[in-house]
Amino acid sequence: MVPPCPHQQIIDLYHRHLPELQGVVDWTPKRRSYLQSRWREAAKRQRIEWWERFFTYIHESDFLCGRAKSKDGGKSFKADLEWIITQGNFVKIIEGKYHE
Image 1 (cartoon, rainbow, N blue to C red):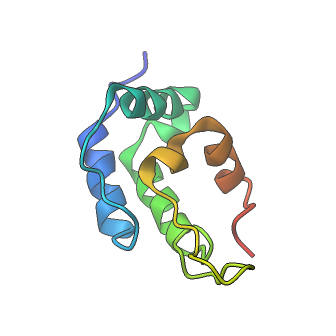
Image 2 (cartoon, rainbow, N blue to C red):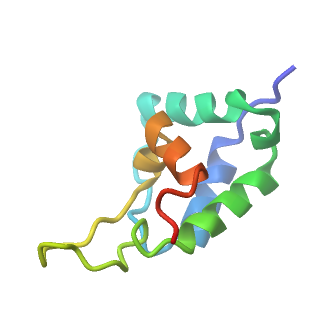
């Protein structure tokens, strides 16, 4: 049986480990479903410690945290929690696409 997803605890970890990224103001049903899906996809993700390590890993990425210079001289990209927990982006992060 899958334990219930501790949404607020995960949001709190996101805010603690990634303060440079946009904070969560409104936890919409869509965002709730994205996080619920990532939680249920793998047993290892059903532990709050996994999410703490995941956000620490994201913090190491200059690109995801807006520290990388944009190629066209414009505003740097910065991830946010919704972007991070969208399935395609989530997989790319785990696979190391945004880490050098």
